[in-house]
Image 1 (cartoon, rainbow, N blue to C red):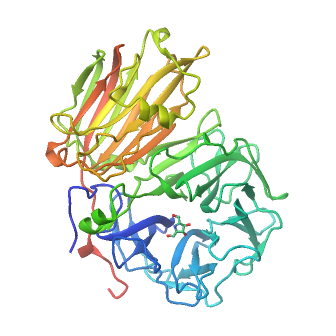
Image 2: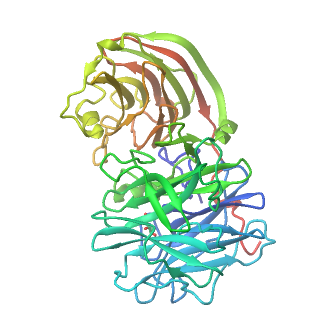
Length: 543
Ligand code: DQQ
């Protein structure tokens, strides 16, 4: 039977019960979207027997569960089937690469193919009998070699993939090449590496157009002057996904990023967002990104709920016009779930005021708001000692008055506001420029103790003199996913209100600065519940 609780989400992907982490092998094949994911069928905790669960969808919104795709059964994966990626080979043949933990507890890379390509759901998968196709490289620790990417084909006719690793704390993306997909050789030089970053998990490597919001299929490398390449990897110690934008030369096997990996390096999301993976969707010609969003409550809470882990709402991603960062935006299919639209224009929010957004189901909502600011020369100076935006957000939380800001949304707020998740902006001046800070403040998100209520923050690369400051927030019971500046800066948070649940949850626009701001536009919708992994709808291999 399915579980239900006020924390369970209505339109975010999650299994009906138990533990889930990374999305695996997302792909589109023959009219159907597939998502696989790291799953423990035995309970709401990570285990040393990880499986791949599998669901399918026609619209990326409603998902039908299928039987498990991979279970740890063979010498090459007997101790877990870990993360991996799909590639659609020429002739429309999907293949899967995944990490197995073998009988010697070594991480190795394995290949699997669908048993029957005429099954519209590709329910059964066959592991290649010659697995592993790549064994542990010499000099690498047995637990430091994992997460093969979607492969790409260069003009020389060879397939390429990268695998995450580390050596002496240097994080590495090992590059492998193959003519036949079975025999793989490691390139002498890795695709990229960075000292002192530790193991790189779930790397992703894909092209983006420099002049279009369309997606690019993973094997597209030319015209060289029209594509840039994104290299993304997760740093285990931070549990954060970082990315670089750069140029890739397949003849020299050379990747040259334009940004460095520092504390302020680009991230898909500055909140909870890990193990992300993207895929090219040929139907709508776009690249879609999903990621694991873990819980902020305790293991005891997970046992009480019977589940742990959700997936972020799928996002389309593309390169910003200035080519220095990616833009992400919830896929347009969310509109299928919209109802009860509420909207207004040009509402002045005086300093210290609140405006309630009524008429939508605020525990399951999609809210877009834009702010217009005037008299910006009044903005506060940025203290030069403030470097880390997250720290500014936690020291100057939503309750601390500024001049321009904090202003934004109070989501999942209780009637008396004791509970509230505040997503807000502050504007500063810095050497004649304006700086826009975006924060997600979970401090007062729940009266319950023992939760991770960490505050998140990041800058938004916009000029508030020229542009309005926009915020879009997807609210879904225990997740608040926010997109600042039209998707330039994203912050995802998990929250577990005890009062602001169901119909008790309220939504406000707020301005706790001294200067007034203009809400130039607000649109909000209730988001209907999607049909996600309803056990009774399972399509089994034996059907
Ligand atoms: N999760 C998987 C690994 C990966 C990690 C195991 C990232 O393959 O490195 O569940 O969350």
